[in-house]
Image 1 (cartoon, rainbow, N blue to C red):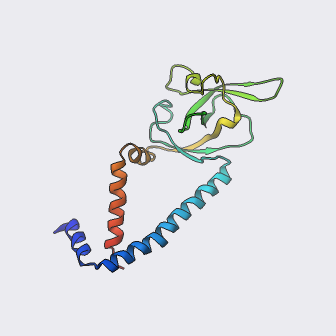
Image 2: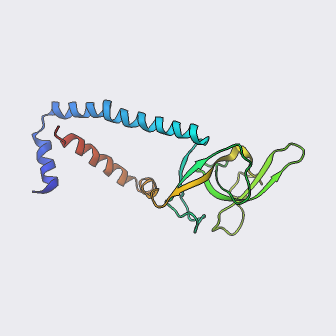
Image 3: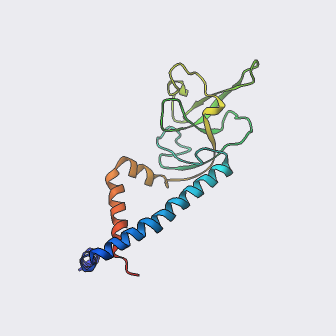
Length: 185
């Protein structure tokens, strides 16, 4: 009959009370532990790396050939000055998604000591001033979320696919739920 037929037979043989008990147990213990563990790991990484987002996924081809769409970047934010040539992840006021680009120019203001930063995607023709907030010509240190210190190629495609095709996310969640309900201990 196959895997699907066996799963359907397994579901039919369960009583409503057994199904509810397994769902409640999953919801309280397994899901709670998974969410709690993920939050603890994320907060721990934030403390260790000094970055508000220690891991990001490259969402466009603007940094090719160095980083491709779907690569996962590991970030670190230190007190060291930002230098031209470094790859940084920054957020722009009014934009929800951070941007991964290379620093092409750093300018230190003599009067205040503040540092102005200009970025550009390696695969883009011009600098990022068109991406910055209206009227903004430079980034400041508070816009920088972190510097790229490592990457895993292609692993971020899971995130991209689930974001662009939510039906896949729901199918995966449903399949995992089905697996939990039909598993016999």
